Length: 234
Image (cartoon, rainbow, N blue to C red; front, side, top):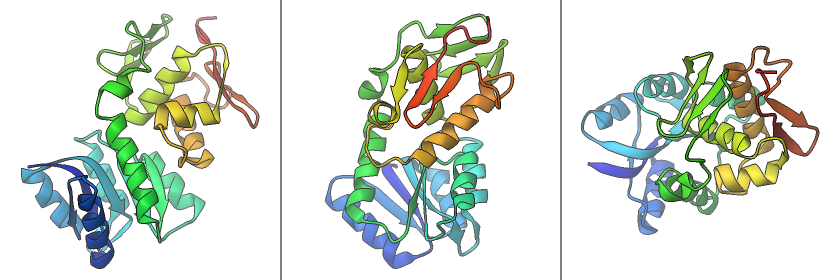
């Protein structure tokens, strides 16, 4: 069976309440309460987005995320009462697309999920992409297969990182503000600077010769970023 959203959280009452709220407003959602149950779910079902707690009764949400990322590239939003910067950085580095702290507002969480579903649903997401992609001989962004190559070697990045890189490349050689990125890549106003900064760093590590001295993605202090076309080819 195909679901819009899978909640993996051992706080059963919270997971059930969230599930009931989402279903009430038309997002087909199911909840499981352990990593083992999540693995059983994927044996017979599919989902478009995952809400994943870090502390599960039978293991770590971080480890479960790594396992899921081996086969699936769907949005994963971490939900956790843990609020340290280290936890958030780890969550995003291992493949999470966002990090929501508990206790969360059901309305805000629902809005985030709706935006994710809309963005990965197809038509609107494709509207920011050029038909011919980007290729300067060193860096290639393939819009058809949604892949990235550096010196002809494919680099593994998440779906949201590909969209972010592609949007910056499409708007090359000009300042792209953080608010513009939030509106056009995340399609919401709930994403934080911290989430954006981690994804920018991961993209730089994938495409730059030296991530500490980037030539493609340049930071414009307090404003946003600029993609310099043919940066490495110069």
